Amino acid sequence: MQTAEFKITGMTCSACVETVTKHLKSIKDVSKVDVSLTNEAVKIEMLESVPIHVLQQALPENYILSEQLENVDTIEQEKEKTDLQQLFPLFLVFFYITVTSLVLNRYTGTVSGFMLDFMGIFYIVFSFFKFLDYKNFPGSFAMYDPLARVLPIYGWVYPFIETGLGLLFLFRIELKIALISTLFILGITTIGVLRVLISKNTIQCACLGTALKLPMTKATLIENGVMLIMAVWMLIS
View 1 (cartoon, one colour):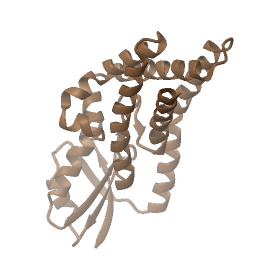
View 2 (tube, rainbow, N blue to C red; view 1 turned 120 degrees about the horizontal axis):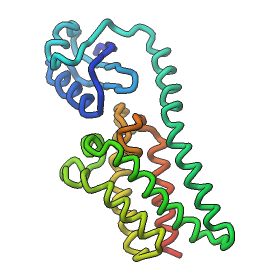
View 3 (cartoon, rainbow, N blue to C red; view 1 turned 120 degrees about the vertical axis):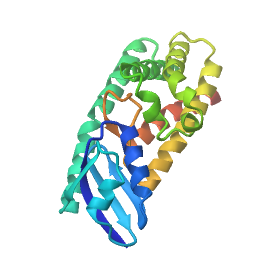
């Protein structure tokens, strides 16, 4: 078994990652392909060494492979640093949602009120970012959400579902339906996120749409987990 890493240019979205992975995996002796959109790199595990020109011929002409990357440890360190930097918008959004929810409940001081407002604002804000690049969201979402993969229309209506759920929580309408729906849609997404993290594939997270290129990390899992815990707590209480 041999492993080689190359620089690759021409990728612009998660659909490109899927295309590159598919074409490289079709090559004889290639057993595993890990493509990073963030670092513009591809890691290939091969049963027997495959020349770079053979790999290049298997790709569409707009994707260009260049010489092998040398310092793997340095690349991984830079990737980790880049991931943390790219996740900053997600942390910032969570901070503002939390502060706003606290302010809205500064007089009542109820935990349930805070949670309902948090979940409502969460959905509204996250749906807003998805609408910023609406045409590319379904493809990125289908990279990891199991339902969106088998039912493409789900990816197109998902931002509208989030907006609707956000309004239900903020206006305290049909809360039981909103909570059960949250468990269903975020539960399915969480399964997809877990699969990606376990397989260690590098793909773009579509939680804040595709306008912001966020990597799929454990932070995505925590984000979904917070919402799921709140939904369960509200249903029980």
